[in-house]
Length: 390
Ligand SMILES: NC(=O)C1=CN([C@@H]2O[C@H](COP(=O)(O)OP(=O)(O)OC[C@H]3O[C@@H](n4cnc5c(N)ncnc54)[C@H](OP(=O)(O)O)[C@@H]3O)[C@@H](O)[C@H]2O)C=CC1
Ligand SMILES: O=C1O[C@H](COP(=O)(O)O)[C@@H](O)[C@H](O)[C@H]1O
Image 1 (cartoon, rainbow, N blue to C red):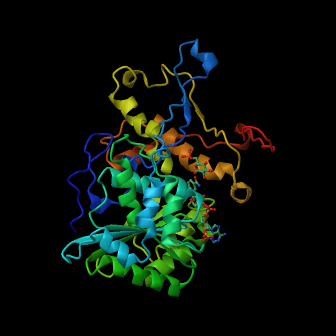
Image 2: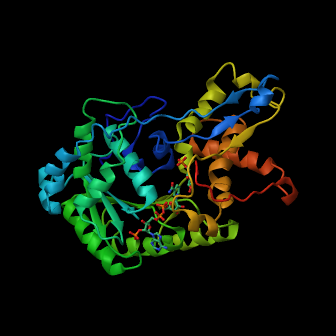
Image 3: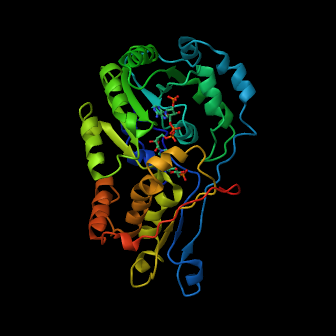
């Protein structure tokens, strides 16, 4: 598979990106997948700071807004006016050399919140940094009826040149949008996935095809989609991988059931479970701060730190997520994944290396040594509706 991109940055922030690991969690992490609000991490409360604690406050990365520069009109006159897939494919000089491979990324649930807010912008960031293969195509898939042009308009509203503001950002956005297409279908219809397969093949133009399905959908339809994707739209001559967003079940038992169900159709190494919090800059930098900072490293111990607080706060309301919170709940939604991951990174011992397995092993050791919480250790509150500030 000719998937490596020599242009990929290889600094510690942007680790070398072998693109055959396009969907690897560490790769997505290294591409700073998530970028908006950051949690506050405090070693001590502000009040305790006077007594010598350290307090790290919100350090959100500001995305360079693309709005003033997004050439929506230009885009509309250009790519959005092209009607057929093949017309667009030709317009972007899609190479028909069969020796090279392609990657088709299908965002399942493309009409939803996560896709708009996070996935398309993250894919654009990868493109912007030349970290996508030469031949890639992105497909949005959902039940909502939409044209390619409508998808592009939707996506263009949330793209930002957040990594670094550069002169050619608008051109890059336009090029990126040219590679985005939309296919409407049901999540449990083999027939609809066969139609998707046909369209993907048109774009792959006989090259070796690798296919990635990003499940940006509620968990109750994960298995239906994986079944249809694997039986009717998997690659015939390359790899097929699936990225699954949390939540992975409600508890240990349902998580194991979900894994068993997915494994009816996929091998473990085709499944990539994402915790997007690990892509936050502050979270990514935690390990650097801990292990490479000569001031912090020797002091990162219970001898010197009295109290650690992990605070998750949002400055907006439920915003359409009410049903989800009611059914799933905020504790299951963020505590057992995002916040526990941060706790583990924060408190684990130094890993042998920064390889994913070594870090995971240290996290597991730490989690095994934590005294299980009892109900009496927990104070639970209930939000009430409010008209101001969420
Ligand atoms: N939003 C976020 O910030 C984050 C979300 N997640 C997780 O990612 C997944 C997707 O999240 P999000 O985009 O917010 O979710 P949405 O509720 O926006 O759902 C995504 C899409 O799935 C389809 N859909 C929604 N509900 C149903 C249903 N009951 N049956 C079938 N299809 C449905 C809709 O598309 P259509 O009707 O067009 O088919 C919708 O646009 C969830 O598992 C969520 O927990 C994880 C991290 C962050
Ligand atoms: O997983 C989730 O995380 C987001 C918060 O992440 P952020 O990157 O947007 O800060 C939260 O809003 C959402 O409800 C939850 O599902």
